[in-house]
Length: 122
Image (cartoon, rainbow, N blue to C red; front, side):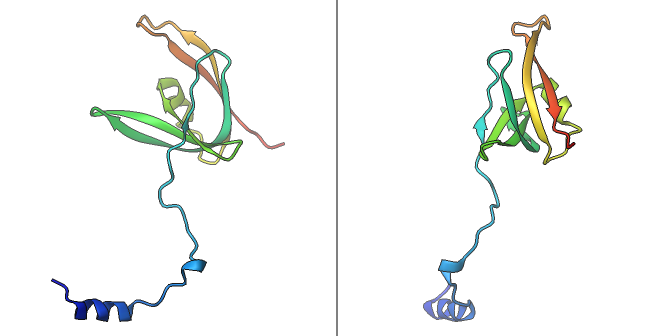
């Protein structure tokens, strides 16, 4: 167990911190606002940040993260189409995602189909 004497010795070894001049770098960012594609024609434009794997009830799923044109963080759960589409897109790429149609897969709910476009520089 540390004594006051030990704590005083440790404090003497730590330089004083000028808290008014501390600069910060984000180690873990907050979660982004959820991107929801409800209606055919809905679109999102932003800068792709990363794809990460999360778990829910032991099942893996992919979350795509972005910075929107407003500078705020956004995210969406990636079904098969989005996961495949973003597998070759580099972080930092400007993208536009458009919900274009529903595809009948024989299941209760149809699969949402998307167009993914990347910005090109002239």
